[in-house]
Figure 1 (cartoon, rainbow, N blue to C red):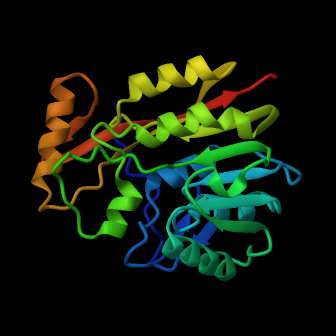
Figure 2: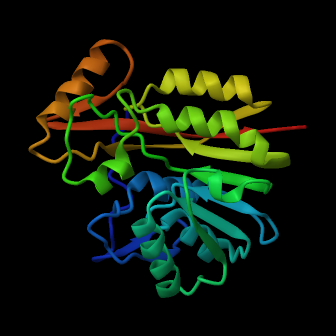
Length: 250
């Protein structure tokens, strides 16, 4: 696996896609800062201005902001269960002058968009394999990253529900990092969608703080069981992150 240190910030709070699009993000203590996976996902998306797009688990809004700025798309809906995240994302949309392009809604996954249909759904959901007795720096931060013991809870929910919210020939695009139960997630993706293809990939460092030994032990245990797959360089864990697109033909 090639380790790629792509998509570092240009300066504090400023991010750049490979396409050259720059996004400014105002940091918030209870909102997860943009992760390279979100930028990889935003770079992998191809849309036109008329598409109706849904960004689930928007967090700081980075994916919705990037799509709005890159393509001047004006029909984007972005949801998050965290009120603080939505307020932060709305602030970021004003900073980036795309606040008229995005409709931010508070609620869990698809709940705020019941009965709506989209051409494209994107998401970088919480997917940290959270140990059963693990802890993190705040309840809000755990809400932003906790994907269950093998990191798959939100993926399964999104993949199994997405078809209800997609138009004919609609697409779902997801990064499926190999620190999750990625093989099972891809299998579900293939079972639920008519067409599945790999559209991009990268490799990133797993976001661990030095005092989180229980997370490292959990990753090592999951690797020994053949669930996750990583490359160890010194004390760091690096994982491949494939981006998959699913299409419905109904």
